[in-house]
Image 1: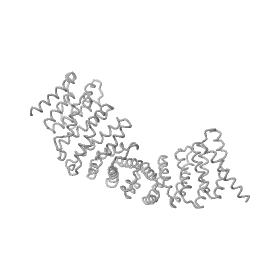
Image 2: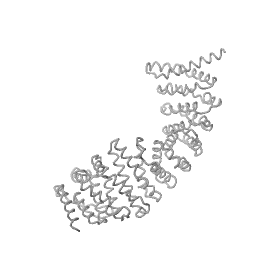
Image 3: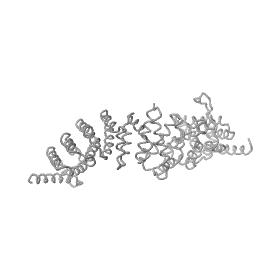
Image 4: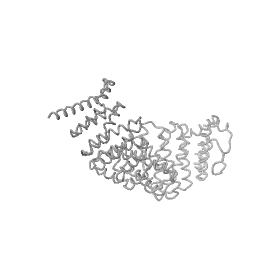
Length: 526
């Protein structure tokens, strides 16, 4: 070993020993059998890191990997045992990542960088194993509820090391093909570190952090990995990271390359289309990601990237319906005046999937999700949609309302929106109106809602304003139903309860009823 390396090593050893002399000699050593059968000496952590440093300088990466593994196992053992007598030793581990001991952190970061090997060259399997062992140590350190540790890691350029230095080594597909499983493990570890860090950041910083990750080449690199059948653990880690990144819809998308979003969506398509998903949790994560993306209004990318076959497969699998109905709900929230989207959704079988789900579901949450989605569909005029509304969706809701004495308010709200959208956006014939007001007797259920929940009065008032556009003969039908179901009495009772707190909804309904009665009276005289 040359004199320069010898001097660096001596300086490092002096610094370590000065910090931890008392702890080194107050603890007995003992052995621990690691899972691969090797008996490794359980050293004081400051001594262990000194051995790590020495081995790194000597570039004995096979032995370095064993030392790093021992370091991590000893640290985890202390965490699991949670013994107060071991607190001093545990603090030594933690201090290696704090601002109090920058040499330890620098050593670990140097191992990740492997700066002596140019970025365009391949790394050996032993070197890759060392890199991943350090990453796993960082996963376990960032798992602690220690905001100061995370801040120190970030201040010392951890993100650049992960998303630039390491990711740049994975950009060329032919490089990752060599030791592919090792690279998969490294990518998995990067994702888990990035997940852990987010838990320790405040609201503003976590948004900036997520935007930085989304701007990186991580997802472009991943797009080179997943067609080569990476291990399931890597899939789980990347999907979990993506779910975490899209946890809030407050992310500023302006500076994020659109190509990165396409990479994420293409990965979802690939997983649904190509992979036999024995683990349903992977598929659930994919739907969660698509749901989050649909909340970001990235509907163009979804339309272009998810083919008709993929949507059909999602509906056919019928797994986690609340999630895929939420995707379509968000998808339809962006109104498309050319109405192409409606025919597309009919063609892939969305309406029939809703009908089948209603017939097989007693889950209120699923019912609510279905009707939220269907109410967005009702924005688009279509005879098939009207027919399905009258023959399936309204009768289902009436049966549901008849069956239960306590009804979730959100379902009542969706029922009222459904009637509003029917009146406002669909072309209804006399036959349709006759079905709605006479055979299905919708006013009976509106009356029950008015009686049971005072907070629905505003929505009912809005619905009555749409009734104003109906032909005179159907206004007369409504008047008869209003009289049969005591609307005026219920509204007057509500006005008494609310007194000066009414927002005008009660008066609006009463005034419309009075107006129709007056019109009917004048018509009869004429």
